[in-house]
Length: 438
Image (tube, rainbow, N blue to C red; front, side, top):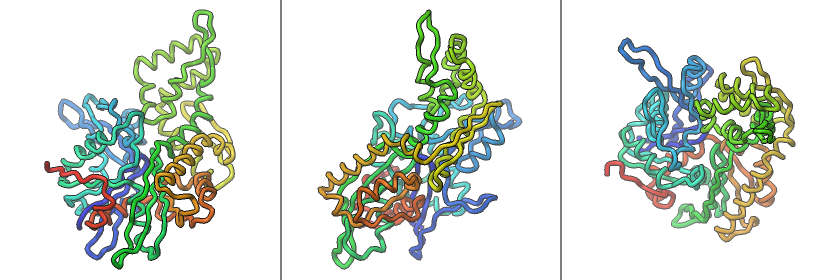
């Protein structure tokens, strides 16, 4: 074993190692329903009686986090999209059962769960970890330096002495182009859960080998989570009172939009349960012109239905990737929200986001000083690349290029593992090398 490549994603995470025989092994996770190579980026905390004066706090990640949530709800804490906190200077910690957890603690708990549940415990004994990073970390005023510092603080206690940071689309490109034998300009689009990252590379023959030359890298915090937001905003939020009004001393005012902004963002939805905000909603219901809808919001909060809501959103999005219509259905505390959605409707909802992604394509081309006609191959990776509207964007932008996608969910981790054991490649592709022993 040499280095381990870790694609720590907003929605899913993958780990790979390069074996002595040159084979790339993707760490697998044994589940009752079959072997999985994708580890959902989820955490569940809960407490168990330990026989002492205080309960013991337990934590699980990935699919086991979902198991723990279903077994322990509502007496547990479920966390999703923890990567979105990495570069957020305003997030310092969150309280879980009286203990303070910073981002570093959450990431470390997640990686530990990956290590314990994976099929290759020895792979994690490597001293070098190569981890992907987005071109631009998600969040308002996100700091790249802060995110990298937090990554290092999370990983150092796990025994790693060196951390290499690589742009995620460049890692995917490194894996993808390893078998190409002709010069080409390649546009790599990594479309994940929290960010969309584009890189352009030039593949050229040099010294008897094919060499990658990075030409441009651009990123934007618009991806799968934003598409989820659009579905929630159009279907769930109106059913729970968005757009309704209430009476305030004889004036008609709109029900506060901030509640529904938090509702549609996983990393903020838990704030609706805080005493102050919950009391505000209960109080405003008395003056609402649509109290029955506000009552559904209150029941949604009490039922802690955010997990079920996001599961329903994910299913709807998956269905619309393979068929022209789907049924969204969410049930909680005697309330059912159900509606049919067409792919055309969904694409109209995400159209503002698609326009921004299209503009980002143009910016990447401009940075590389290339025209769309100069691109020979487009490689799509990441879970959001399955959305038909995303594929259509690149088909339209690059009509003369070969649009390819394979191993969308594991290509980044495989590229990271390859880069970690190729000193020449690392010098070209690595954004930063951190000595964790320093």
